[in-house]
Image (cartoon, rainbow, N blue to C red; front, side, top):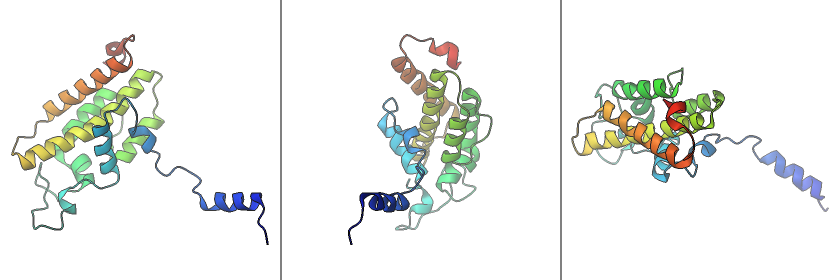
Length: 181
């Protein structure tokens, strides 16, 4: 028995997922976002960052390296740790996100849903979210591995530097400061 082309296509369509399950992929992988930022965000979304809960090959203290109150995992580090709340609150107020995100995916959903009329502001929100994840991860590693003090003001400052430098490169003729201040 020979299958018709339409039968093969119907079978393929039945097995193929209807929706893109990784809605966040096209949000974090953009040419204007530095690849190292996208990569760390991608690892965080997939739960693959080497947080203390994932280190099973060695006996270590699993408590958070920033607050020492709870066990460290991706959700705690980025959204439940009292130290990183300060960074998120500053960035959230700066980019105008009304809700406190609980996961990276939920933050991306809110930013996609809450699109701004200005393209510059939308790009700034995207960069700010991904840069926040990157700089929190960098600061966590510096605190644990190098014994450096966690400084949320420095992290927010670095995020703003990155956002503005990328915006000025991407929109050289636009009034970036007026739209993103």
